[in-house]
Length: 354
Image (spheres, rainbow, N blue to C red):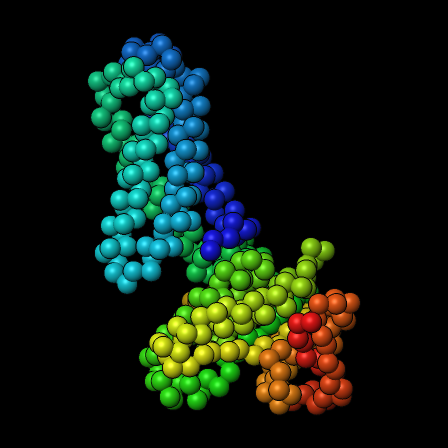
């Protein structure tokens, strides 16, 4: 299932705006210093003059960007599942050629009419070749930009290129530590290669839920995913709990697949904590945005207690105080729990759906 949420909407906007701006630039570089009389003589078209060159460029960019957005959303996700790099490149190239030719035909029909399809000027092929080579470069750069954004994470990517955390900054954030239960036993039983494939499948199931619930991945650590939400006036803490329970449900729905493929049905345990942390960029050769603070340490310690209290999800007092009024959940309090590395005892809560 494809979710057209903020992440996907941003990708669509990036693709369409990139193509519109790129083709406006192409029109300016190619025709910006050419006068109307020369254009009319060159193209032998009264409709093709300087002041509508840019409307053609905008229309072409909008149409081509829209077509490529559809390909990006509904075709590329299936193509990239193939392990063959060659097939991947060929499929992407064919998709781009189809979009380019489709846009060219539609724009020609729009501006020239059904009865007068071809432009009649001597350098038509030269102009089309220039436009095609230019489009190939723009397509490569746009794909590269989106791939970097995807691999680094949208928030992480934009914050990194903006240098937002060059100096340490404090933020209020929610963190979830999501860990595969009995991971050591599973790895020993099925082998490390199959175990790695199992993690790939599990975290692939997690991806659409991250997008749906406006969550970001901080990092994957072995069999654990550290998920985060920035706290602001739009924060919906129900999304944090919904992500976990929806993930459990998805894994159960595919239990036959996991049983047949890996001879086990994976399940995860999690903890949630929130509070003030410090963010900063570290490293020169490999730069990363890292989080520091007791919030993460406490969340990690709470997660390790799930097995002791026979529950799949534990939350901190800080998070509980902001979610306790929700009637769709059942909370059970464990008072005065000693946490490794903390002098003071804390209250933690198990969570189940009502």
